[in-house]
Length: 556
Image 1 (cartoon, rainbow, N blue to C red):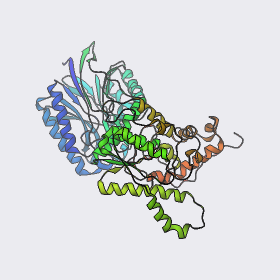
Image 2: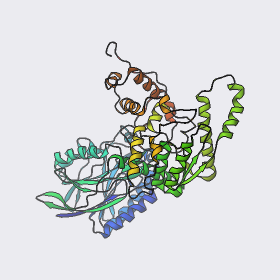
Image 3: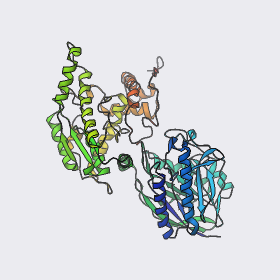
Image 4: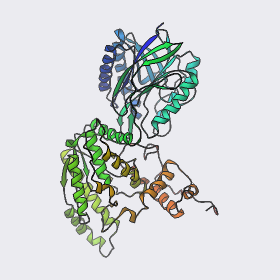
């Protein structure tokens, strides 16, 4: 019976639907692990098709192609190490999320995911069938459990594997990033490890997929729940860990331990990885964005340069008569620091044309948001014309606070293909901008201190009318963001929000704005999920909705 195991953890970035490309990537990683003397090579969840495949796995041809690729990979194990691989797997007319054990040139064991997550960003129950409780796999006399992702978050599977004689668990994962991810994983998985006394090798996907970002941060736990191996966050990584059976318990005796990221650096890298992979995986060579001289566009431009490099970022200032001299100076200064292309295209001719066209209808009426929105939509038209003509993808720059209350123009500043700030509140934008000015993360492509101080310190303004400030229409952002946190992430009743120090009038007004802006958010571009409840995948409210919370009579 084997008393020593070398397990290679492959933390890699697949492209959803690129079965041939993902297979080639798996083969390259496998060859390295084999050359390093691995006994078992472990990949992340559904690596061959990429996670999350959503309804793509409902296409029979995609599932068939996945099986063909898996058989090709299995053939390579004839004279090499075993592989733990994950794929959509059709069995007796039912589709499963499966962990495949490959050795000696064959797929020798198939284990199906028992718990299918159907909450938050997950809807696996829509496309997969839940499997039976998985039995361990025997490998050279070692009993190995193969729980898949959610199987370790819920009760039952780890306990069943222990009762069935498993000695160690190897788990393929597709666990997306959110700010609480690391602590949640360690707590939830550590509980199962400690309770059952089963060591764990946890291999997670890395990379951006639409609104989700996978941070990797793969790790291994000893039987007592201590972390004995940790891979990097937000980048491809690899490690070959050595395990030995000591006092009848599998113990990791050699593995690397990288610092895994949290806090502002993790948020920043998530936004960079999400935007970068969206651009690269969809075949865009460049991005374009509107540069206003304000904090949001400066931060979006900085993220884009960090992710793609300055040569692939094009910033365009589109001034009107309301654009301040400071904004013009600040926008250009920021782009100089970033090293990206900067152009200025005054949009007065477009606004004058619309004024002339609409004058017969607007005459004798006081100016309103209609005229303000014409400015925003003229900018969108300009940027989309450049996008269509030269090919860069348009990036939008609205933050979560604005998206929440509808402080954004549909078909105007909301127009574009992707929004890296979509799940970041305004107060967090300021904090992250300050953090980025003080830090230049390695592996990113941007400059030091990229955002001029005045952009961060001046009062936010849309500059669509004279002397306009965001605070004219909204509470101060520290107040607004706490209200939104209560209404969105925490789903608190009004009386509890008021008890935090907010006025009843503010709570009712912001709740109403949140609900009536739902139709705008449904038409907004995707953006990186950062927090625990993003718009779109996590929070799905109806557009037509008359419900409003009411305070019971006499309570306040």
